[in-house]
Length: 565
Ligand code: ADP
Ligand code: MG
Figure (cartoon, helix red, strand yellow):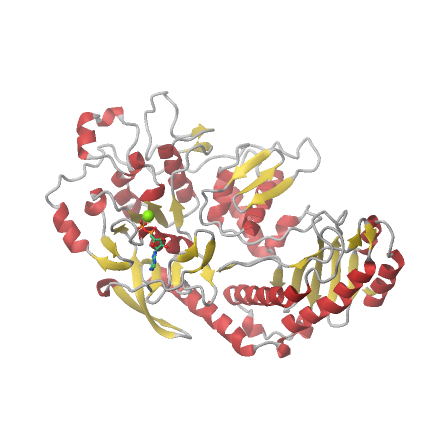
């Protein structure tokens, strides 16, 4: 392997040359206690910055294996080290000057969730650590200024790397706290199915966020306090006993006046499928891993989905067993979102009336009398929610502030009263007694079929390279198609979106073959990620994008929104 001195000599020799001469720096260089790898060099100073990584062997970094010998600990440690490195880099970014992105030094920005990311990985078998960053190689105009790059690679980076990744120099207490939190969170996740719960919210949790655009905790918020009737105690391995609300499997209704905190509670459950960092306020809000937010999504495309559980006999005679559309209505989109989530193996639905199609959720007594069942293609969710639980084992948590229709169906009813939950199951059920019972449809419900075969891919088969671009957290494009993920609300990070883009690309080029079902395709993808890591998706990406792990549920959701199926 070349040495750091070789790199220095090379850089000195290209000073003042045209920018493309930087391309020759690609390669690996030994810096003594780590390897610096220049993976991709930008085309000019205004293009996306260059990709550089550092590899610090387990022997050198001396991180004890007990900190990463289980996935939940390893992911928490990687996340912590990445955040710490990001802070260590802050004073150095743009300290080296020049045109365009000259002097930029950055790593992935982590939000409140703890996600597996390609930006910082630790090999479980030997502790080798890899950290990926972006550096704007400095230039004046388009003329190389390699003295500035030498400052970055030989002064700034070694400082930040040494301060961030060598165990003897790190704050052991802080790392211990990170690992202990990860163990406690994992413990709660493992307890949920054993205790027949779909979620746990610890007393004292801070659920509301600072603002619509900030995921940080709201200051001076009212801390969560479980109603005593459904309070449970868990014995966490590190923190010890913790009390909170255990939401039982079944049908749980959240009611209450407008602005009393219903949607905030549901949002916390949606993000509870991920672990949160210390100080977030939702560290001990844990939702069963497969839980899926279900909402209406007018205008989305649907491909060969069996929505007959909810929609039948459409006036245009369209098939609802293999339903396809380029422009779904509120109710058909919500039906598809449910059925697709069942296909993705979801055990919990999270539904908010604010984002639901009313005609999908309920049909009131008067309307039933006026418009006969035969004339209504929609079997509303309320008539299926019991079936879904009893037969399919899928629980529902439903926010419904404006209709009491669900009182009869619910196992548990929680009222949010000025941000304080109260259990009102008994009194609400009593009040519901005087109202006519909900009539269930006479024809028995039939489980949807999930035998959709994915047509052989058309992309890449004929043409050359496929172009991928992450447009934001909410969308990416693959050649000329845009996949809109705006309403896949549990997607938290644009690096997850990029990972989904690569999942789709991988499926298009390897797995859509006219034989495999969507379930088989996604299983293959998630096994690949599980066994070889996220980076396995990047086989044909020379620029090495940063990825963060999506759940299997989001991989399904992404493929389902691809309009070129
Ligand atoms: P609902 O869905 O019942 O209409 P929301 O959940 O949208 O109510 O909450 C209304 C407002 O109250 C939001 O601005 C939210 O940030 C705030 N809020 C929610 N929970 C709390 C809390 N525990 N303490 C303080 N403010 C809260
Ligand atoms: Mg609301």
